Image (cartoon, rainbow, N blue to C red; front, top):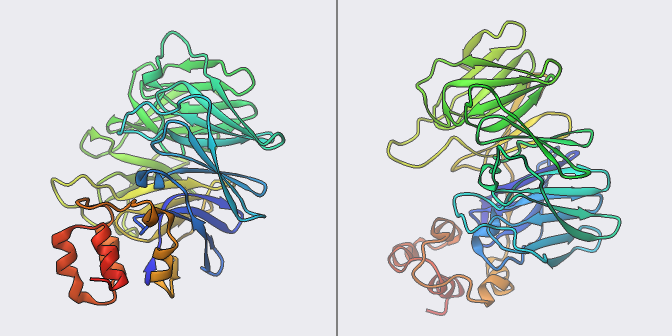
Length: 386
């Protein structure tokens, strides 16, 4: 099979991109070299649930920790040096059965530990590299907030010394001390709901959940300011703010226009050199599906329904990348797949049918597959047993 890989979620380790594939035949862990575009598959990720492919990754030294999207207790650990996966079952449930959110969407490294911040559960899961153990911490939150308010958007956590900053759905900022796990809530006065956050030049740029006002929190003055953007007020107009040289780019959730704000004057401009497609009406869709920022502040965005990675450098340069992978023997990959052996692809589901169609070299099967949905019959077609 020849095909592009789509990133479920990712981390950047110097010039190496690590990701668990999304919209794939089965989820696998890959590395991709950002300098020469070479890609390597580390192996199939041993999830019990297909939907856990859109996961959260953290890396510390030679260990990659994979937190699930929807799973009550199961984490995964991948040892790069020994090329082995290990399943870790936590002592406590970490997912709330809310399919609208991921169990975890933010991870930070503090000292020799990775901290995975839970959504709507008031929990932080720590992986301590020194002891190779997992620990569950309960956040001690103030009376203004409840567990339901602790729902955080992808890649919005920032660690300054031992204090973790996160945007609260209620509109303010959460400050969590990673030593004693006490939380302080900073209200933004206007109680303006928010979800996504970027740290740019000692200021937090917070995207609104509703409306068209960008929220800015200055760490030095500890004051909020608001900038109104000339777009129609609606739910989640912007996905994130991007540090881009002398400007700050506002990446739209659905709109095809990218706005920029000049750092020196706060003047609002419409960027003409970034072309985004017009999305179909009455369809749940967004321009980008994943955000990642490396340690230097550069931003990586995964385009929706494509295999493009948009890379915004904080000095003001931009490029697009796609990673091409070639599987020479698709039958062998399927034969050795744990997902297939466990009957993971069942009858009468539509999971992955587009990906299945893409891998077929003989187009005469496509109409039959569309009629029968994906599943074991597709596997039979590929094996040539029908």
